[in-house]
Length: 107
Image (cartoon, rainbow, N blue to C red; front, top):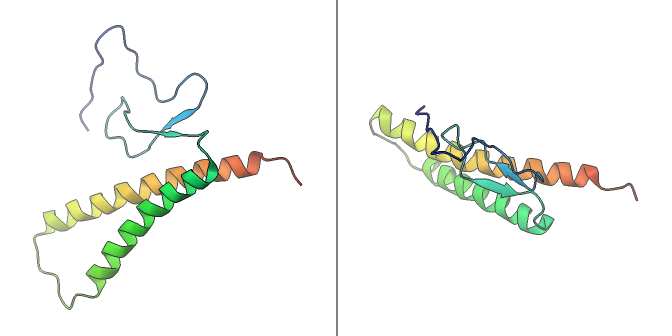
């Protein structure tokens, strides 16, 4: 992957000092620009993950109902990458939800 060098005085950073924002693993460079707000309400985080995972699920279900799919291998590779990015984002957000739930005091 291509490495981007920040202009001074910026520094490479994958998280903010207060750990509020976590870089998505689907960032394609060493200098991430897409983050999850780890302090967002749990229902919003869950809805966000759900939206991304269900979108990919719907596309894959529709694709599986086709009798045949004929296309070049590079198109399938691009399609798989598109699905993987959305699924990875959803999993990253679910990881945040899980950490938040585990950090709650026992009731």
